[in-house]
Length: 91
Image (tube, one colour):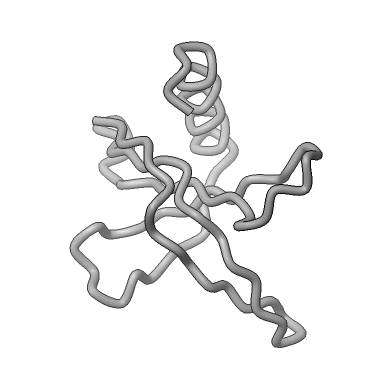
């Protein structure tokens, strides 16, 4: 199941301690990998192409803990889901 939304805000801190806000573009569950994924985008519209950040997450985790995507196969699968959503006009 894919959920496309822009409601939840995430504040991420980089290695230098700088905080940036991101919005949830969409989230989905993968039966193949047995994991849930979330894709975040910067919370500012610069009018330019942006880099999105995919993460593994547990939708039932009250702390919204994000884990890095572990394999190239997972990145490829996430990219395929994102391309499908863009092509279908969902995001």
